[in-house]
Amino acid sequence: MQGEQRPAFPTDHNAPAEWEVLNALIGEIYDSVLHPESWNETLARITGTLCPLNWDAAFILWESSNPPSARFVAASGLAAGVQEIYSAVYAGNHPWSRKLMRYGNGSVVDSFDIMTRAEFAETEFFRNFLQPWGIDRLVAVLLDRREGERLGLMLPGPGDRDVERLKRGLRVLAPHMQRAMRISDRIATLDLAAGAARAAADAAPFAIFSLDDQLGILAANARAARYERAGFIRTAQDRFAFTHPPSQKQLLDLVRRPDPAGLAFQTVAPSGKECPVLVARVTRQSAQQLGGVRLGASLIVTLGSAPGETPVVEIDRVAQWFGLTPAEARLAVALAAGDTLRDYAALRAVSLNAVRFLLKGIFRKTGAGSQAQLVALLARLPAPGEV
Image (cartoon, rainbow, N blue to C red):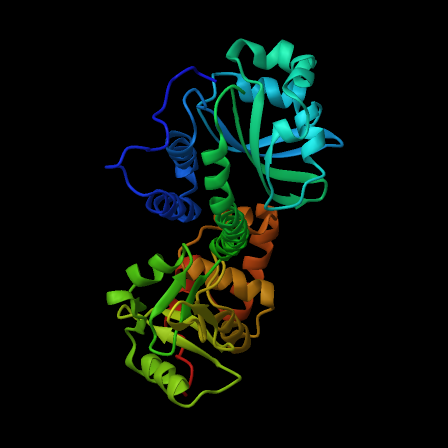
């Protein structure tokens, strides 16, 4: 539709054989599954290789006649604004589109087989839209259907050209394009699901690691790095390890002697700071691939707790030691972690006066006379297991 001429399908004796050309196009089609941004270039290659002169345009689109709509997947050789005009005015509402709806998936259809050139010349679609480019013929490949929409590869051009070689090539390419589109759709669905899972994991207020049985890291959320910076773990060479030897031993024991209930414990950084850990056994994931099966996650490890809070285990320990309510223990531990009363009020969405009231109860039960004394008192609290 731009008028740019592309080389015709090779016919001289030194040109590659037709099957070699088609094999190369098939390879590009499947490459485009992994690199969707290259579909436009692949379409340009198809038109440049298979189409006669002045058949420059090609596009893949989803189209519906009820209600009329069009969504372009890829396009090559279209003048500026053509997609917008087609979608707004002609989508699903011209003779070619309506007649193509009745053909099955995999069909290669020549518009001359569904209406004569003379008949098409009388249509409003030709007179008001296609005539300036001299386009009055279409070769289409029907690729898929879904909920009233049809997916097709469309190659329009002037009707006075020989398109037999084009149609022959498209009959070879059609099943590969169908498979490629379905694979692409499946990959997109999986990518969306994986993206949603990553977003959910990143929103979690703790670190999450998916590990295989060799403690190789298969996935980690956005919070994972802070626990390595704090010294609780190492992730060298994409392998997970606790810096605290007893914690690492517990993890290795779980790998060697699987406990379906998993583990819950406190790990310790070199600084002496504690962090809660949950290790869950999951049914080992696997995926079929060429050459066999790829094994996936068998362990899920989480570290930490919500921002502004310390582990629930530690909060419970403080509450039990001093006889504090859960709310009082949560505030006491937050102050020990460096939060101010104002920070804590904002985090818990309560008034500053309510937080001060809790603090009075903490002072009464612990015997502390100030926040500094409270922090010092909590720092001297015996570790779990100590008398």
